[in-house]
Image 1: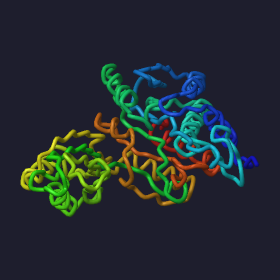
Image 2: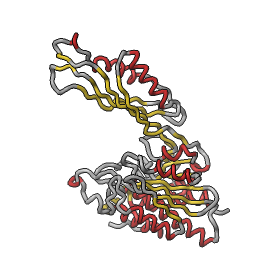
Image 3: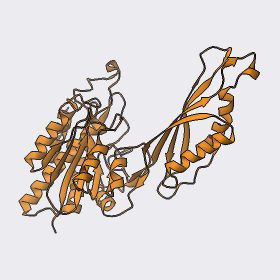
Image 4: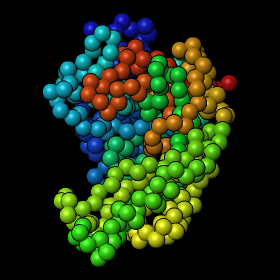
Amino acid sequence: MTPTPSSPNDDSTLDLACELIRRASVTPEDAGCQALMMERLKALGFHCTPLPFGDTENFWAQWGSSGPLLAFAGHTDVVPPGPLEKWDSDPFTPSLRDGMLYGRGAADMKGSLAAMITACESFLRTCEAAGNTPRGRIGFLITSDEEGPATHGTVRVMEWLAEQKISIDYCVVGEPSSADVLGDTIKNGRRGSLNAAVKILGRQGHVAYPQHADNPLHRALPALQALATRQWDMGNEYFPATSFQITNVHSGTGVTNVIPGHADVLINFRFSTEQTAERLQEAVEQTFAEHEVHAEIQWTLSGKPFITAEGALTDACREAVKDVADLATTLSTSGGTSDGRFIAPYGAQLVELGPVNASIHRVNEHVKADDLARLSKMYEGILTRLLNAP
């Protein structure tokens, strides 16, 4: 069933979202999504620059040459659909049922990409009809490497932009930020993420002769307990307290009569601006030393924490959500990491605003069809407030 449109923008956003979903862009594949987006943007006068790095397709598009730069950022890649038999319809054949649009990427984040495009189309048409020239520039930063390793996507495009001396002033990332209804939550920051692969060294031996062995699990457990129960900080007005989690422990040969020679442990920190990755690493290494744990540690920093303080961008977002949905939105830093972690360090005010996230990365991923047009209107409202002529 096709929803009844409430404005000329409704059908175009829904139609474009469906066209994007039809392209099976499982990460890092783009499957033609970016070509479709660039075609629409070029028709508006955007200058589009494809930026392939490694196995990843990216592009930067820009409208205008002076004034503050408002960029929309997002990704065309999606996670694998999983077992097809568990879906009620083909994940790459968009399906409208009971007012919902089903398909992989409907919420994360092809619906947002479609809304960004149609928002710009409507905004620029409105400006032209009124004889106004926007007071600034519009950009699109799009990658096909967000759901994967994220090594050749946004991080590389930001390096390229820095080389070109292009600075983003405001950035709206289309991640599905909403919790229960569209617009109820805007992410204005994210915690940092620090991972460690730890190899605890011991000495293998027969369980009947423990005096001739060194059990790495026995050594590691008190140290891990100390780390797990430690109060790392109290958080602050923007972030909850730093979290330490043990995500995997593996040791031994699978038999009961051999003391293992080593143990492998995976840990993760989600940390606030009260911490730094360096301080957390030092604390872990010191704790292991205090417990005489001999370990080899491989650290991976997935992203530093960032926050956008309340200001022009958050105000524009709140007002746009209020106008479209009559909601008082909440600013939040909860959830996992996003590509915003690669953009914010360059100085941009950044928020994430997108659909309800209840079904993302699940079978039967879906979004309320009417929400796509409403999201487009929210994005258009942000453009109007930040870039419209006086």
